Image 1 (cartoon, rainbow, N blue to C red):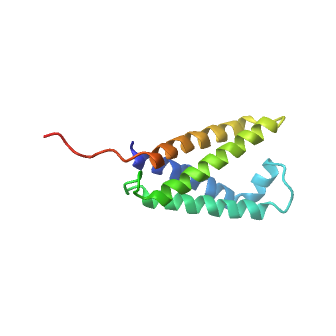
Image 2: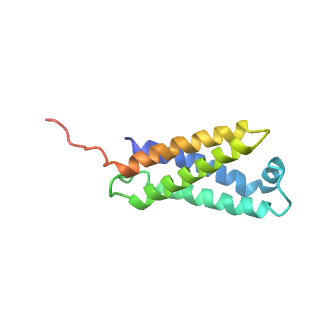
Image 3: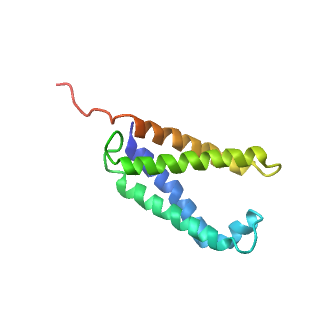
Length: 130
């Protein structure tokens, strides 16, 4: 599997989300109909997403899978699996405005499957037949 592409895509998506949450917490709070105290939570969440994006961006050149960069693979797999399951649970119990959250849940679950594959398999052999 091309882990460089996977790490780059996850870094870009997490980075965009992190920047959005860090610099527009009030707007996100209004969009989600949250209380007035949640902008700080959204800013902290934005910092978390930005940190994960930086981790993935800097680790994209490393060999990932099996025993190589295992903490990076475990962290990403755990984040995307738990986040995806939480989003699916939220969408199944929500009554209105769920299309955006369905899209987020699908993206999260796709990343969880891909990172699960990377985590539980060995990286491909780079031997050339001569």
